[in-house]
Length: 226
Image (cartoon, rainbow, N blue to C red; front, side, top):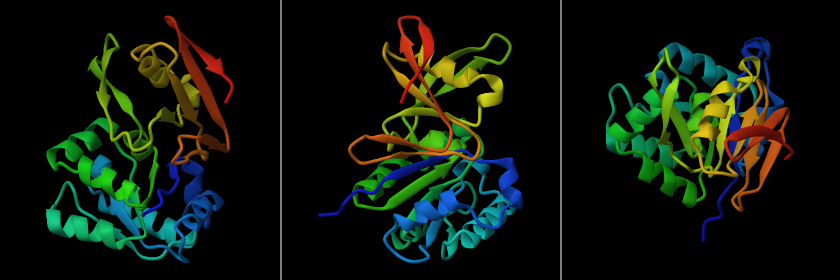
């Protein structure tokens, strides 16, 4: 029977472009169970941007990964090839970009059941920025940018939590909106730039760096302790 592995939800850090090796990523790669794990890169949220893929691949290799292979979703998508790339890799990575666009691509290609099954089968899965949010439970679609009226839409739910990434300079406005649209007692995690959270198979959430936690009580969203 396959043993599920922890899920890592990472907030990107603009300063990381100057770092040759990332200890946080090294921790992620160590849980894969092999030395220099191969990575399947899913760029649905970034339209398979080649420049971003090239930079991220180098960053991963410098931090201890093996080969990083693009599994196209937006361009040149072919289901059999996509599945083969993900199944052959030691870990699957969901890239940053735009959450709503990423989930639109996931829905268009009917990828959610396959990705959930990979996780249930013991595949290591991690995301950065928008990719972290996509791996979580839900996000907000804004009906009108001017009046900030929104509604929830479902994400992959592989990590059964709600979170936002590097929104500390905006006082976690989008995370607050997400919680206000959620049931009472809902908890949300604000992952600061350069930090992450680890979600274990039993649902335990552990901060890796600076993480702000909020809870909805009635109509109010308040800071909470982890």
